[in-house]
Image 1 (cartoon, rainbow, N blue to C red):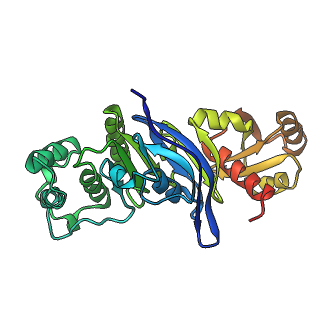
Image 2: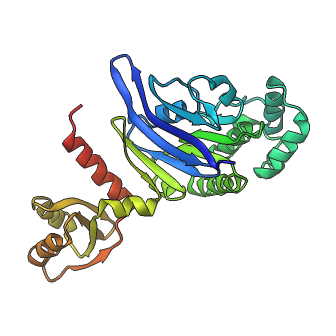
Length: 307
């Protein structure tokens, strides 16, 4: 049996004259957590919805869970869970009442047993009698995840699930996603958080409707062939302004008391730093981050294309 969950090729989508997604191709395997990143309007949510059969592409081909995304969209919908960015549970119902109501709406067999199992698996049992409207952001998102897993889907689509959620709740939420992954459930998740992207098995980065990069975090960073140096000292803003004027410097960013400088050519970077950085600064080579790689990709995509 194939371990491929989704396989799509050259998907395109227009909204009026706006070409939102352009020749999108991707393969997602069973149990993978695939993160989708990109600026607002980059086409990531539209791409995911096409792969899940929620909207029809204008061209291309593909299968989701072994079903054709053009001709078997209704069948696909029965096997996926979709969690929207905005909380949509009933505030005047408790956690348990919300879940029981959903089992009745969809005529799920053994509804009470399903709810009990889901409450236990997602750590909601102790709060099951609490009204949804009084839950914190993290618990609301956990309830929303419970609601979209009640029917035991093989694939989850999560649209920025932890936006506005505190760091502890975000970490616990991602622990649950990896537990679901261990059970063979595939997850497509759109996010703006780089630390969340690094929790995914693979990531895809879209800009202006184009898939600029996809694969493991390590492979994407390696493919960009960037060199990053960390500089420590005083007056970092002045130094940053000077370095940005020099050809060969791709990007800079200050974190705390350190300036990070990235370039494509390591020799050119070392030469610039040896002449431009005074002796009272300390600098050393560090690992290029995923954010560095994506920033560079987006910058060069905008430079090389006109939309």
